[in-house]
Length: 98
Image (cartoon, rainbow, N blue to C red; front, top):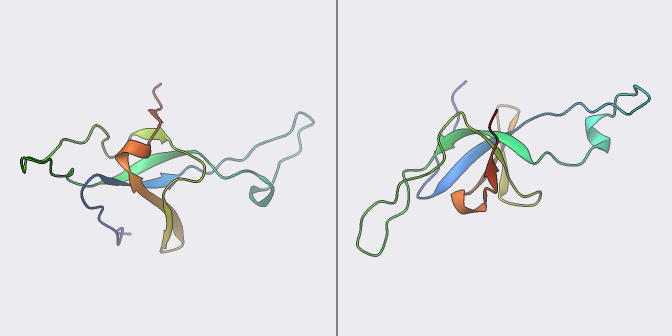
């Protein structure tokens, strides 16, 4: 299914990763009881914003990379039953490597 959102300027579209946590005793904690995910995969990237000289700044994040983002950052969107978050690239805290 195609994503209906195309980020502009320095915005990125993130699909939060679903976590299924298990307690030490082996009990699976349901999504409703868990905190909101702070990890996700970049699914779309804007072209970069224009600087004061009119040149396009390059984005340091690419589609497919896993990232760590703030718990309450960005705007939540839904398309085809899938949840996304759109936020400025500058709010992403780190790439997840390995």
